[in-house]
Image 1 (tube, helix red, strand yellow):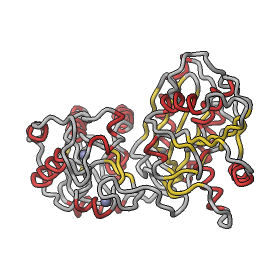
Image 2 (cartoon, protein in one colour):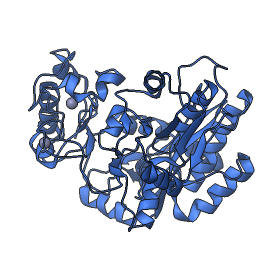
Image 3 (cartoon, rainbow, N blue to C red):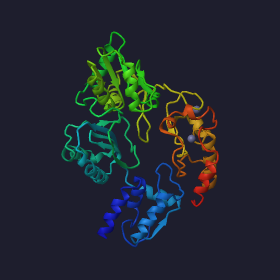
Image 4 (cartoon, rainbow, N blue to C red):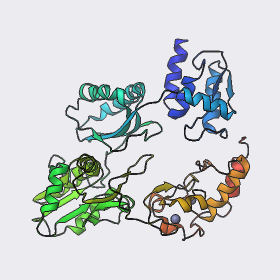
Amino acid sequence: MQRFQILFRAFVRYFPRNFVSATLHSQGAITLNKPFLFSKISRRQPETRPVGIGYISTEIFLTSLGCRCQYSTNANEQNTQSKNIPTVDWKTLSFYSFHAFPNSFLHKTRELLLLKFGEMGIVGRIYIATEGINAQLSCPVEQLDELRKFCDQELKLENLEFNFSTIHVKAFRKLNVKIRNQIVSDGLEKGSYDLSNQPKHLSPEEWHTALSNAKTPIILIDMRNHYESEIGYFENSIRQDVDTFRDSIISMNKILEGKQNEDIYMYCTGGIRCSKAGAILLSNGFKSVYVLKGGITAYGRYITLNPSVTSLYKGRNFTFDKRLGEPITNDIVSQCHTCGEPCDTHTNCRNKTCNLLFIQCQECRKRLSRTCGSEFCLRLVKAWDEKFGRPSGFDDVKPGYQCVYDHVHRTRPKLVIERLGGASANVPSDLVEMLLEKNSNIKN
Ligand SMILES: [Zn+2]
Ligand SMILES: [Zn+2]
């Protein structure tokens, strides 16, 4: 029994949290040789789902351990189960540190993070590299002290700043810890700049005062990607038309050529990109570089806590989680990519084989079934819904095929769809048939 529990714990770490909690909360879930129900439960939209690869591999695994498995296909039953799941109050936060970790430390740290954060019920995305750690998390409120203690004592990162969002939800489905070459990929040669050469980090209040009191136009650079700054930005900032941080460094160097003696102000979402970009500038002869400490996230908190202050940032702050952004002000500075109406809500195309990141208004969402509107996605989703009988559902369709777009095209809807639902580029014409055929053994 103990062996089973250990295996079970190791196993559930790799499955979505909502599946795991449903399983853990089901009667007899951890008892050998007793039948139990397991099913994917969405609190938002409890309903029966097609059996996917996750369920099949779950069944094979549990059966090999001597469990008898059955699927729940009863929506009411699932609904009742989901009501039994205790509600959790979440805090959404991020932190980073350019504290150098030895290479030999990385795998051990990853295992430790998966184990301890798993126990605390924390979900999110963590990158670790020899240059440091970068984490975006949703943490149950009652585990915050534990999280702090873990960072202080186990990771030895005392005085780590937890950068809290203004909107607190469970922003991630599960916990992901990845070992990377760098926590922020810069594309530069190793040793070409000194990370300890840190720019001046201004608190949101100092930043607000500096920008407000500037007598002459200042050089203010947005260090985020094009789709992030599309929905919100500091007024008078230079927004770079780039897809990655690497590209933003190349672009930044061009923009700032010959400006080594001027004051440079830069900002990003949480501060990590500017920590690096600022160090790169200072290592290349720039004299004074100011960055917004804690990024737009911290500035958003400052504005929320000081309602009499007029925000210099307009619109939303894009976030790399389920929320795809949180509002800083009510200004809508962008448009729906399909109809052109004012809108700042990002979504991913419902067809995960497309997964296009784009801005879509409610009208277009309804009209196009939350797809990007391309012929490929509309046909696939329509056929999928007909097959699985989910005419009103806007849940993701996962046909199990890699994304048809590279990372550049995936975030540039104007390159791949025409207004009002044209044909998408580079999609094989028979792909819909192939995907439906591939999934033909899936039963509702
Ligand atoms: Zn629209
Ligand atoms: Zn699409």
